[in-house]
Image 1 (cartoon, rainbow, N blue to C red):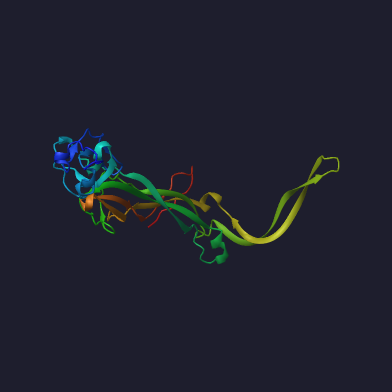
Image 2: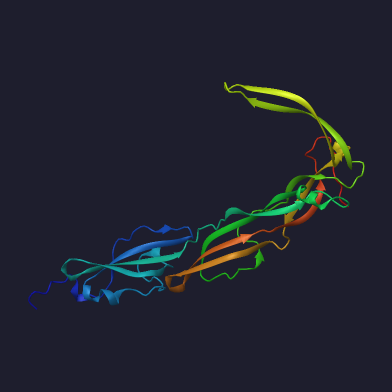
Length: 286
């Protein structure tokens, strides 16, 4: 008909003719992506010529063998009634190594450092310390043909590091030994320093003796009063626990992008004598 364009290749206008493909790249999940530009002779047939996601590649380009269609095709109109259909393919990279990103989950524990039997319990607020307990975390990004289904389960994920004991040093106040502490009334003498600001901008310092009678807790033997102690935490014998598993389907559900997080919970493993105080008396737990 007059006015109709002459279509190049119109005798096979519905055939997809592959062009020169772009490079194949691997993303952070270990999935290879590549685009093949196809030429079609009749632009009006381009919508129906697109390929359904999830279809296995069956063309002549050997580097795409094993790939699935990820995107059915972006259409670009060309001269003479032709079109270019860019079809994106993807597959799991067979050479991708699944490695974790290492992190930590911080838990703050309140730990009493003194045995207060026989003393006013208000002392507990003065003898409680906070212990920063770190639980190792591993974050993974990888691809699979199905959802692993590991959420809530224990196990050893790929390339997980070996986790040893975690030790936190504290200094336990020993109130149990009566030879160490005493509650009594005493007169405490000390020198008080007074700073006076003068009008000319100078400062005058004076020192004078002060005596105060008070009832308090006094240390008899300061060396035995402090016991260096190691609080020991050990890895959970059950192993790593999967606490997160997100999955996103691509290629019509043929491939899943997986993001997992695994946690090693550090559990209480007791106390051990500390060695970080020179000449100190270590505590022995029985």
